[in-house]
Image (cartoon, rainbow, N blue to C red; front, side, top):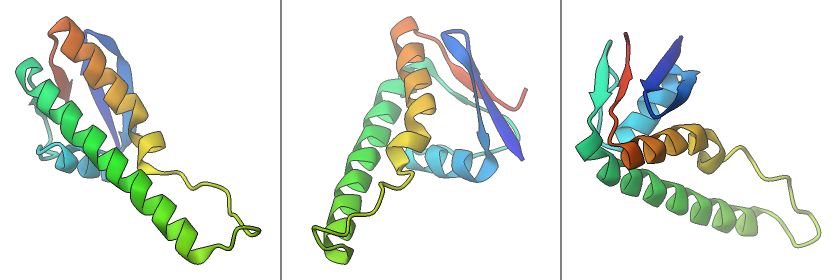
Length: 105
């Protein structure tokens, strides 16, 4: 199932329900049938998501160093930063314009 996030500050962001549930959990929200991230909540949500991305990148580097020898590097996986980027970009734009983000309408 797809979830569409909307804001007057940016184009819509569409993602799979599982990813939406995970990202909203990282910022302290729950995925309900309908929801909103108020403009005054955005800066805290941005900070939490950026922290999670940093932690994920650090863990990915450590895991790769553990499992791969220097001559046997694997291609980078589709990490959190790549999956969360459109949503994070939307949150930044909404924060700058003082707009809310909604879903489920």
